[in-house]
Image (cartoon, rainbow, N blue to C red; front, side, top):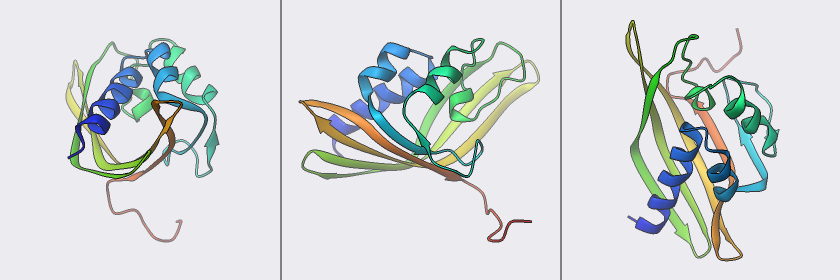
Length: 143
């Protein structure tokens, strides 16, 4: 496994989970494109979408799709089946993102399949594209 990419990816995801805007900017390209299936079936462009979610009323975990139901929640993430493919200054990480959230009613786990494309720009790795899909058997035809 490519430890440089793995360490960068973990730093990027930790920054998002902790609502760390500075880390998010440091690890994400300004022209980011992403698909987040639970938000909209359309592509989202740029940083403002996540910036809003990260600064709106302490939404820890909601950027990843783990809702806190209005309660202060503790969250953590794990990467299941992480695979890193590196091609020079471009890398692709694919995995199932598991977000565990502890609430007063117990622990819930949200799962999403993700791919993140990273490119080394001016000597620094940046996430340039994210694609998320459900980690459950979604219907092929919209009902």
